[in-house]
Length: 96
Image (cartoon, rainbow, N blue to C red; front, side, top):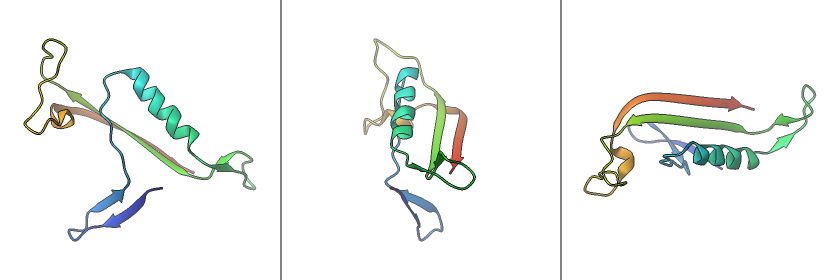
């Protein structure tokens, strides 16, 4: 479960939100399947198989520098996710 909070600068923070860097479409599919499997469902008057939970999937596409010898260049703290220029962002939102 995720909890939304507002910080002192009136920015929304989502406690428990996870972010993953992936380089393979198959891994993205696995995350989508894992998320779908953890959603709860139930019936409503309008829909017998209604999802009873919200879901958000956001993909950020980055252009990285050239990969040398199978390894990416990392910055000083080793966090590769911050490298690369954002060239696109896609958000999928399912509001129960």
